[in-house]
Length: 407
Image (cartoon, rainbow, N blue to C red; front, side):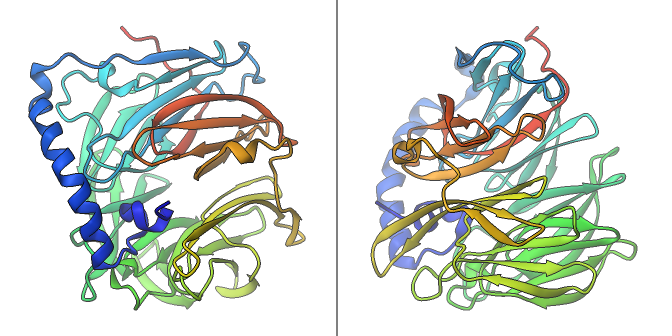
């Protein structure tokens, strides 16, 4: 099986040129064939959403009404889609965007890379289509698109949204340029400033008046970046870089002011690891050598981490599901799935935790080109339900506002 890092180059950008060539030779003929049937959205019938009842109604306590799930879709396929789960009905609905936005010709676009809710709006970062799609969170109706090249992740504070950008084209390039963070006015939905950071910047967190962004350098393989940039929000200038490890990706902030950082390593001899930065001193305080990290999320004192760690030397994935106590910095478990269901998950690709019920959600990308699966687990790791999703399900955003019925 091809690695997560290799097959999904829009997320990790670690392919060597030979591997890219193999993928292009395989996918381009298929894309050319598909283009004959999908040349113009306006001339085709809109694919309707697909509802599935997956659980009893009102299993939530009411604080969280439901969640949106952004399916990435493989690069070049223009198949990013949006699903929605409603706690009040127990119904999971696939592909809600198209029928709610019949006038948007290419729907959500190519590669959905992040999904967040802020100020009554739902923001979807569409990486290879080079824009942020802005929707009304109550209706999932299109409001605007913000053009940002090779955009990656989004975070917010006050009136502004901040989006990381690779800045250059989507390609492996030893001379790839520095990336930047774009500052967006959430009222006008326009970019008002940019700040240059490291190479191929990824996820961000904000602590007080400081914005931290993980720099990967993935396009410049094997000369990865290894820093976290620190931006002063008052001046919107980079004030320092913190040396951490190569090929950084995800950042998570806990309630103690600690920033958890994932390093993907080089997929050969340098393994994936997890690090901690103290935001008070901006120094690395901890290195977890035995905690590989593909994705993570914090809920309370628990950091949920899964890893799909590909190694080119062994030509295999090592998969794990861990929980770390962020207060004690001790690993609580090496497998938060306790009923054996993990054996059914081919490629874990996303993790989220309902902050109200503490249910754990894990997505499965399967083979990357056909519909994936979403698994819901109880807080103690037993499967409650599962459902088919769009292609490459990845990003979940919980909402406290119910989605309005389709008019």
